Length: 132
Image (cartoon, rainbow, N blue to C red):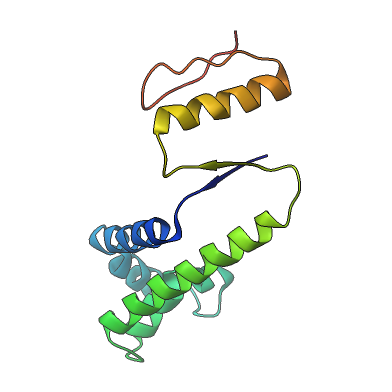
């Protein structure tokens, strides 16, 4: 297994940016449409990060700013729990994504090549891999 990690402050900044982008791309409208279509608030799908916080806002239980705060906070907490869980596992090759991208890609290639006996070739930033 390969685990990707980065500086916690950078990770949290990226989480905040992702939440902002989700809102810009219509998260509130998506949740509004799901609720209008009859998806129950207690459905498993509505308990996911983003949906439950926005549903609270749409119910009038909090402001949009409060819902966004909760979503960012809860997503950061979820990321922290994931890291804690995976760090207990043995045999994970950790790669710090805060460092040089190409250096990390070479390291990942070496790990995969050693494990599976294949040659990987990166052709661009949006790379694809070929067996060699």
